[in-house]
Length: 106
Image 1 (cartoon, rainbow, N blue to C red):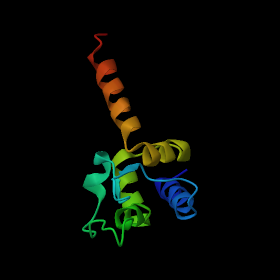
Image 2 (image 1 turned 90 degrees about the vertical axis):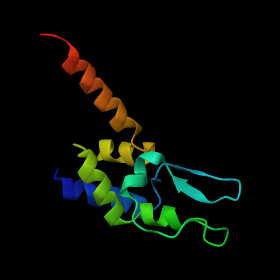
Image 3 (image 1 turned 45 degrees about the vertical axis):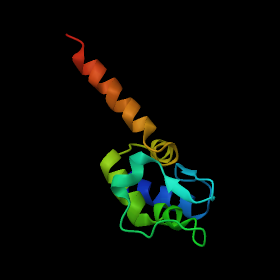
C-alpha cells in the first residue's frame, strides 16, 4: 500500500467517526490534541465554550492526517491508525527501540 492510500484510509475512518484523534477534554468540555500532534496543527481557532471541538475538527482533516503520516511514515493502515489514535506514543516507543537496537555493539 502506498502512503497516499494509507492516508486516505485513515482519513475515511476519521471522517466516519470510526477512529478518533488522541486528545483530552478540559473541565469546560473543550477538546485539545495531545502534545505530539501540536507540530502538525495549523492556525486554527482555539476551542471555546461555543466551539469546543474546533481543534478536533481540524485533526480529522485530510491535510492534518497527511502531515502526521508524512512525518511518521507508517507501513500499514493499522500502524497509521495506531499513530493517529495514540497521539504518537507508538512512534516514540519505536524510535526509542531503534536507538536501543542501534546502541548494541555488533
